[in-house]
Image (cartoon, rainbow, N blue to C red):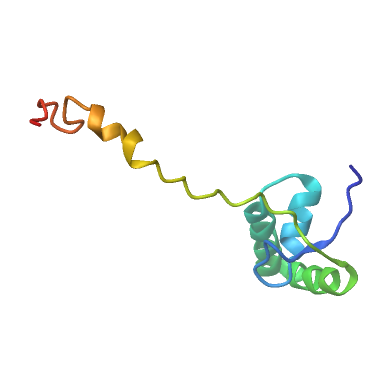
Length: 96
């Protein structure tokens, strides 16, 4: 797999610079965002670096993990609650 530094559109807050850096270095994007904020508060270099990277870095698309699918409905004859003998919350025997 060839690593490439890009701005990610799938996980961005402003321009995707921090999320792109985080993916490139395999760290959490929140850490990179905090480092940019700290650098901006101390001497302003964070904001300048962010704007330069926004202009220079190409835009890329992050491959997000697939979304989980909803569970399938069971047919009526396979209803697992019909087999229960005790209430799972109280432990009392279920009266049929």
